[in-house]
View 1: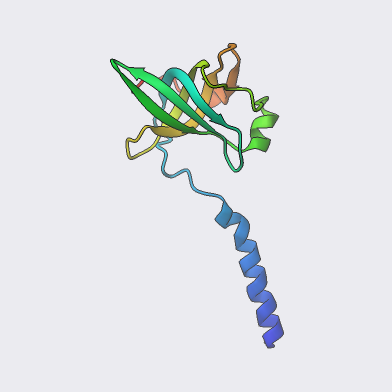
View 2 (view 1 turned 120 degrees about the horizontal axis):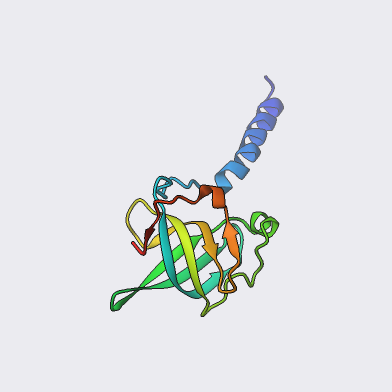
Length: 133
C-alpha cells in the first residue's frame, strides 16, 4: 500500500470513531432498579448533549439533592418536552434508574410535571418503584 492510501485509511478510521467517542455509556446506572422521587426542582438545564434536572427531595428532616440525567434535546422535543417543562420551584414526581454507586443521581425514566403532564416512557416504568429511596 502506498503512504497516501495508509494516511487516507488512518484518517477514515479516526473520523469514524468520533461519533462513538462523543457518546457515553449508561453502564453507571442500574437499569434493573427504579426509584420514584418527589421533590422540588432546583434547576433544569436544557442543554446538549443531555438535559439535567436538579431535584431537592425531603428525606425526614433533611434535604437530599438529586442530579437526574435526561435525554438529548432533539429526542425530548419529539416527546413534547420544552425548555419550560420543569421550572425552579415546581413540585414534581420523577422515576429514575439510580446510579450503581449509590450517589444521589440517576437516569430519567418518567415523571409528572407541576401541571400534571406525564413526560417519559411509560412502557419502561416498573410497578416495583420504591418511593424516595
